[in-house]
Length: 203
Image (cartoon, rainbow, N blue to C red; front, side, top):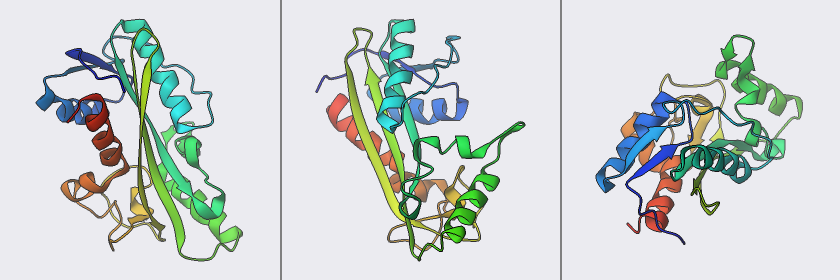
């Protein structure tokens, strides 16, 4: 496991919300975070069929273009009764000509479960895979998961993506009903970041 010793990294994302979240997580370790968007780096095409594969594409592209270590994440929802769909194509299920519509995407998942007469509980999991890549081509992968089941109709206005239909194991509220401070410690991203901090930062 290679440790991150550089004081500055690139977040391989153009998402301002993700930048704030990750910069806040790394601030206590004295690591400055700049986004690929801030540097004007192009977004590479995600052509792999695994979370790790797409995370690697994004991190290596940013590291090579910036000359700095780069951190990326690829995440999504896998539904057991749908053979792991939508999986790495989670965001694609929400695409419309006018941007992403996750209420529509949740409806698609529900309709597909109904059309297949899938038995309840509809077990599912959120995945978050982080890739830390260096300009020399080395990388480290950290995979997190949050297991649970799906519910319908969707519940809650908090969170984003598929949160309003996902109930994490051991809880009765959906991620969409939980306050951020309650969801954050049990999320797939928290699981991946705990592994990242233990491995890359030695914390």
